[in-house]
Length: 197
Image 1 (cartoon, rainbow, N blue to C red):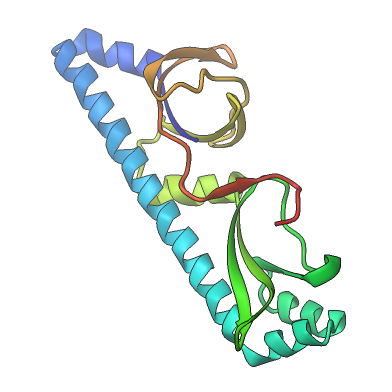
Image 2: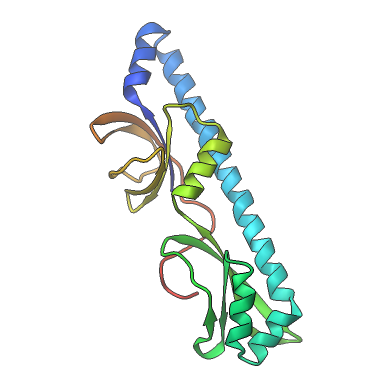
């Protein structure tokens, strides 16, 4: 889930010096726009990763490596594309994925035979959240965070704690500050943990 956090101290200061509900509405609109932009940027990143996996899955060298169960060749292919891993028949696997990542599998088929999968990986980490926050142009005091079962697992700027995961808005106390919170629905894409897929 993507989460937008705005410090309430700044919001309350604005409410006291501006037109009450109008200022609150502006903050909500800004949060919603930032989250929409971050989700769109995430979708672009996931689509790019999937296109890359599709290209690799169509490559004849990868198909040959899977057909011959050539782990060395598979490792070389994956080394050139660190955002993917490959899974073949009978436990054959090359590459790794972080524990918390979106996995986007693409079937590898030669003629009519299924050889395995190339799995594109989008790590759900601080680097991704920071990139999304910068490109979505959040306000200076805003925090963008990823949640896993209500716990903040990555945030920009850094923040730790737990947040109710029901989609919507409200307030929460984190690290001694109160925040206005807007929680978006789960990120599009296939969630998985450390299990091979």
